[in-house]
Length: 475
Image 1 (cartoon, helix red, strand yellow):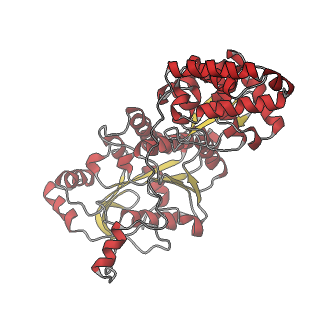
Image 2 (cartoon, rainbow, N blue to C red):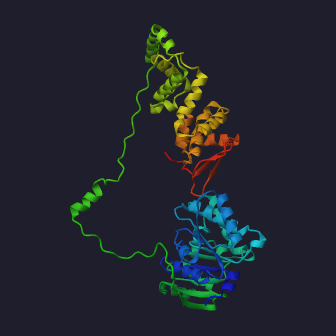
Image 3 (cartoon, helix red, strand yellow):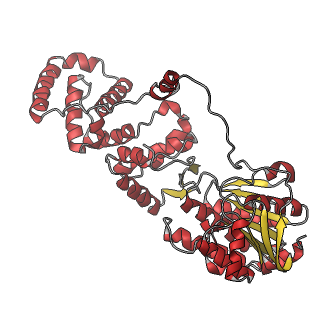
């Protein structure tokens, strides 16, 4: 038997190598105590989401911004709802930041909300590592601080930490030392056996016994269970995780030739690789000047006819077509404005554009929109006119990017990646795209945020529009 009230005051550490039955033990503890105490599970692999079906736990997927997750944690304490924080699919760095944010939200709740709560952290060595690893120092510091608060200062706030780890040697000592109850399972490495024996007050020669424990068998010690080390066997559970141990199963019977075809033949649903298109050679200055002279002579000969066909609507459409034709060449988006304007003038003369080519300023404005690949037919006219009015107040080089973001926000589409923003800005450098967004944010035109999966969200402050989360590294 386990004294639940004593456990809330004295915390629990579970240790055992992979396959020793730690997850089974935690599930048993959660199921048996579900109706007695509020629970929050930090679940890096999504194994405990099945508790939602039978015991009513709410699954909190780590999406949205850190501020969103902290507010959810505050509501969890306010409404006393048991939850599973599902960190599945996040890399180690973002798992640590999400767990730290959520634990900080539970820890910082108002004093009136300090109700008893079991906080179970599976694979605790990921969130309280003993040494720096491949994660960033910021993520490690935040996560270790949150875990230390949980185990050292959480009791007065009603938070009872239950931490499970595969490797005691990889778990920060100041976090492990705060637990007064221990359940030690099967362990093979000498350093982990020695540390487990020290925590249980056993002699080093007795540490060998941890190697002989069966799956689901543990050595228990602590005021909530026993005053001396005793062997225990974990009882059955009513729910099952999504993982589980792999079982042997026979391979399918198939001829060798068929197996080769499965591997070396492309399937019907597989994408066909596309070879990048080679950019067309840039027209030389001499060719441009020859085209310019020929176009001027042709326009002079047919000027009366062009004048009679003059129409503002047709003229604007023709200009848009000419600019779109220039940008059909992938390299054109990255050429200087002066070169593009020269090419534009030539094309206007060749196309016999009535009224002549627009001036450089008008060309800059139209080019910015064209670079952003904004099709006004896809958006609401009234809303888009509002976006264009605000964009007109921005410098020329920012307008295309602002309209690109406005289009994504209006359509609730993912935020464009750095490559797409850089192209709209007229550069190949994703770093310049990041700089431009920071510059626009400093000037108050937009606000950038990052959700817990690392995707960027942009809010256009003057319009009140927000894009959906988008991968900034997307091509």
